[in-house]
Image 1 (cartoon, rainbow, N blue to C red):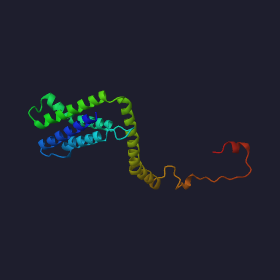
Image 2 (cartoon, rainbow, N blue to C red):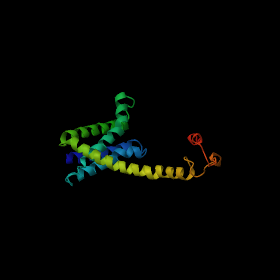
Image 3 (cartoon, rainbow, N blue to C red):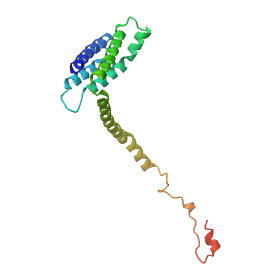
Image 4 (cartoon, helix red, strand yellow):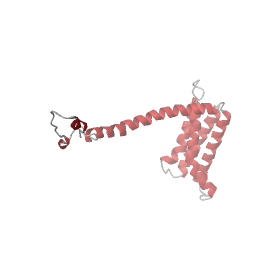
Length: 181
């Protein structure tokens, strides 16, 4: 699977570079397959370096992202909207190669789902910490400081003077005490 991952990464990088050239150097989004392919190649090279970590799950996740980015090309090719466009055909080929790689990964990796769940758990824990830290320090803390400094929902800072009624204390009967308000 290591050799297959490296070959898929190199092929994806080359096809991504050709796709970037065919689209006329349109922008960063057209360079995305080549960038993802280089990361897949890196994950293939790193395979087997650690005992309890498997970079192939990262390569499969990137292949899924590659398929999602190429889904429009597959749809255009199947529907016949861009039959002669070389960039659309190449985008569809990239998407189909990504699906084949994900399928081979599911079949060839031993205990795939157990490892995929562990990878998802790691990714979820890491992203939750990063996203929540970003949320708390950029959105929640300024909002809380603004509410604390500029509003007084319990009216603690200023009490209206007209609500205070002085009562005369003295000899009171039970009826007066029972009806205090």
